[in-house]
Length: 224
Image (tube, rainbow, N blue to C red; front, side, top):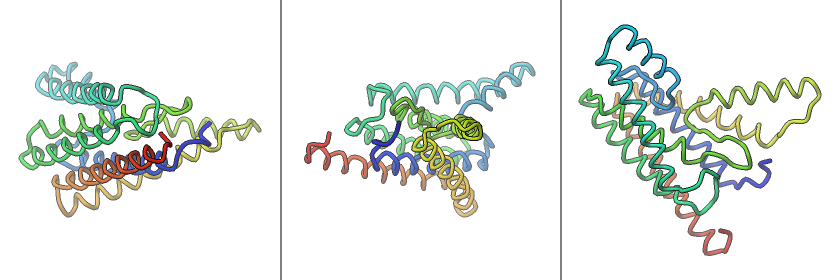
């Protein structure tokens, strides 16, 4: 149950899902035309490339997948735990994510493959950072699981079964935020091109500073 989930987590989760939606839209619209916030399609494309013996393309796709993995690995090293809790070093992880998104923008400006690697690394780091809370799987960089859980909950409700309302509201927030991020990402890309990644990079840094400041305040007040 998520009744005790702090407002900081609702606000931060919505903000990060929106940022991920922006990054993914920009990744699709850039020269690479590739999703960077999740690996489902990338895995399929890797299989297709190998079947076609397009080994250069396969190497690139494998590099994207490995970058996501490395980002998640770094997140685990920094935050140490999978459960979401105020006071953990999410600010550091978010700061690193912002730096890598900025690096991705600089590389994409030159149409360098490293741009996709840096962006995917940042998304892997973010996705692993806020993993679980009270048994609920919290993901902010893709929505397949969220839509699945919402649909399953609707089916339960139609059968008269009790559902976890707070969890469904959280998932609805993440879904709406990711969708809004896609709209914003497309709008910014139309103006700034691949430099549009600098906007979510800046937003991530704002979230990092906000979280760090709030965590410090909560620590002073004895809430952590």
